[in-house]
Length: 185
Image (tube, one colour):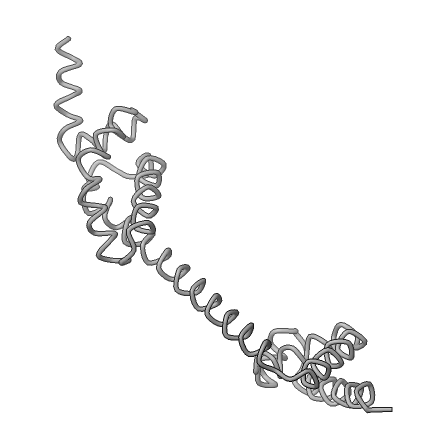
């Protein structure tokens, strides 16, 4: 009985709580959630600005703390360590959310612009798509990198692992093939 009371008292102190987490004590995880869940939630919300994403980050933080406690040492302070995890995961989530939102906005704008195009423009785009499919893979990759992704010759060479001269000659060749394939008649 006295041993259990000592364990409870140690689990209530931040350093004792971390020691119990290291020992994989589920009661310590409950205590961590009760003691720090509110503060983590407020910090996550202020960092991210979205309640649902903040709740996800808090959950991920608690799981990461549970998983990572065994890699800490006795000098590790629980609160700074825990909030360090939260901020790292929060930044990651925020970057992911921002990229996802940007992709969704871009897709929405593209869909709107496609619906506004004339039938002749749609036909021309379809003809280009078909012509691109007739190029070999190397040529198609170059066209995508150089003209759709706006890579420089040097960037395309680095991405494909070929010399810049090869990029230039393949690009020229691919453009010529596209011109022939798209020529009316």
